[in-house]
Length: 284
Length: 311
Ligand SMILES: Nc1ncnc2c1ncn2[C@@H]1O[C@H](COP(=O)(O)OP(=O)(O)O)[C@@H](O)[C@H]1O
Ligand SMILES: [Mg+2]
Image 1 (tube, each protein chain N blue to C red):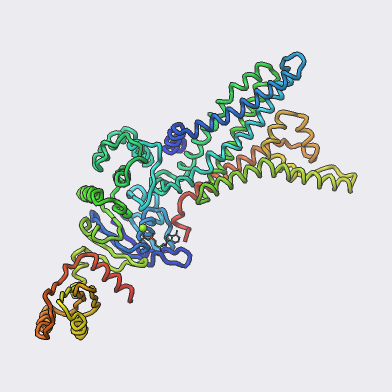
Image 2 (tube, rainbow over the protein chains, first blue to last red):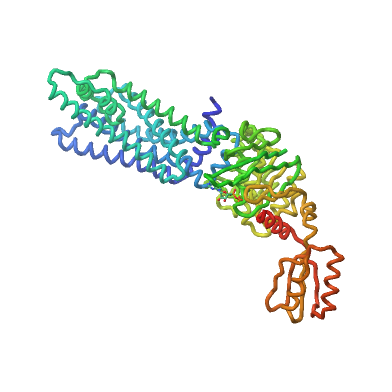
């Protein structure tokens, strides 16, 4: 296990990552987006409240905005970091050399994943000082904060794994990028769209059969795997109960989210590890 | 040391390798020659465990490429025909990374890297970024990289291609050195003379098949019957050509326009060749030169692959 985690690919990737300007500019981009939003938010709210003070409820709202924003940034940055991880090596013709070394496929894939994850975590940590404002004004419990970070972690590892899998399967980075961002659009928006379609069908059905209670697990599934929905329901019990009532299922959506993303991670990594090298035995 | 058995690789319907059989003994520098597209890179990729064969197998030091690829990786050092380097990485970091990839402890790597750089004459480039090195230097660095885990077998795909003559000489010196270290070395090239000087044995591949294998002299002897002869005449080129065409042992007559130079291949014995010359002179042809060309390896190669074509 130690060999898989502290492997040469990870160490080299980290070294290179912190040496390039691209990473630095990525970090700057991320921080600027956060700062612009937070300062805009502060400006608007202190202007509008008569006292010029920031109330705990507003602080909570800002926390919500930052949380959704950070999830969005995770979903935006993770593909950029991982979707090229194998295919750029293929394009730069460094992959074949790496594959003839005695590193196992699992070590190479995990090394690539962890180096990207480490960078994303660094980004999240770099954004931490902004939360100090939130804590200053109250309205947010440390537990909520920890939960949020836990889900960021689950999500970024899953997205990273998807990106690496697609990067392993595609020949060209550009194709891999498009496919990975396509997957993000699916998870972030299309799932929500499916949820609303399911919901309207449901309502149509209930209108025709007035005595039935709503029950639509598939519709609930689409909503449950949407990262935005997860964040919002974690933050607001009202929205959460509105969601569960709309589909007639009270099973917690975060469990579905967790199971789904852990499975996606496991599946993506397994495929990536299997497909990294030519299968000498069965590819006949 | 290397045994290739009935190796076949199909890309769709196209057979890049067609039942390739080959054996290379331990400590031998083996030259693998073939025109572009003959299947050299395909064969080497399979040996390097990068490509799965459609059928057949290859054994390196008794380890099956198909069944024990991880074991094979431990014993081979592979240099692809085209390869890249990571930018932002320095020469010693480059070697250190691959050393780590082979599981060599850091302390050993620290000792090994200067030695390897010394071996390939790159000691002075130790702290330079690899992507800034010249092609020849990258090629040598890649060779050093192949050696980091002290493999028994080296598989070098066109190591001298794209190098200037000086860099090529350097590469050749290094390979001689590696041979002295007892490595079994497989080198491919589409240029035979390039290989002849450093190889013990040569195998010729064409259309995915091994046409001939043996030491350089043996391959030359195989073609002993064919002599390339150049005749120079002052005038009456056509008459001379006609005269030559009548001889049953003469073939492939070619005329260099304007120079009065005629070349042909002669298959007869030395006696018969002498008779031909005597007859030509008594026939009054204006021959002032009659030369047997030194057969270089390129000709051998051309003749062998041509022979394969007509089969
Ligand atoms: N991935 C591939 N897909 C289809 N054809 C290929 C592939 N790789 C090689 N070939 C074909 O196989 C033949 C042998 O190629 P190669 O082994 O690279 O030859 P060489 O190295 O001797 O020049 C060529 O005709 C080439 O076009
Ligand atoms: Mg080739």
